[in-house]
Image (cartoon, rainbow, N blue to C red; front, top):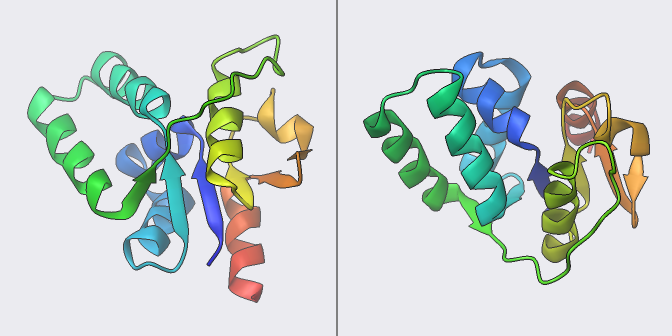
Length: 136
């Protein structure tokens, strides 16, 4: 089974705008892929949906509870300093390394997608991931 780390923007888009990010989460819900996260990614997701999208606390609690049902949490032991312009993106890389991920799925064109790959972990956008996944 493919191991995936989704950037925070994938979780945010899936729960606010649906589309391809939501399709990726559904693949994880149906155990077609193994989706990994870390406490740092969940914290960033929580802060953004509360502050920028004005989610009520109850909605956030419900979503986080469902995450426990289909997302694996890893606790990265290695701290990375790869993306100087946005160190929060390093948390995504740390999670992917800790999970032994095959892919990082992100919409971050400024930093993560520019890398294309990190330590044999392919970094692609949701559309490309779904295209790649559906071929196999």
